[in-house]
Image (cartoon, rainbow, N blue to C red; front, side, top):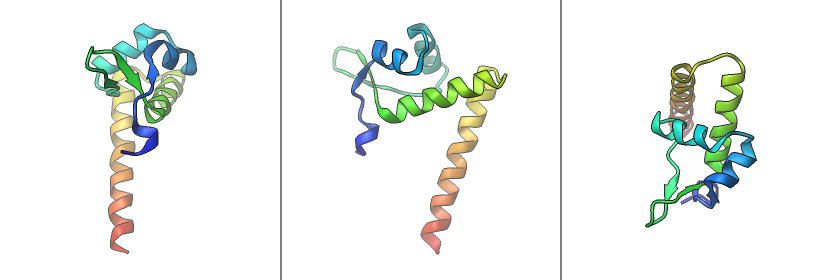
Length: 91
């Protein structure tokens, strides 16, 4: 597992890092915008990659998108990354 993909930040720390409310992070998880790791006890642990997604969510919301729009943009960005990786592998 990549170092930036391992969950290490508690939800309160992650919320502080991205200047969001803890409740917002829970909503974004419920909406499928990100999936933080969980401890055996169920505590959410956010990775550096999750923090980057939260920054992207914040930026998209600031641009006027609603959560459905944010979800679609994130899906399309991930698809572009996958397609670029496949194209690079073929070269």
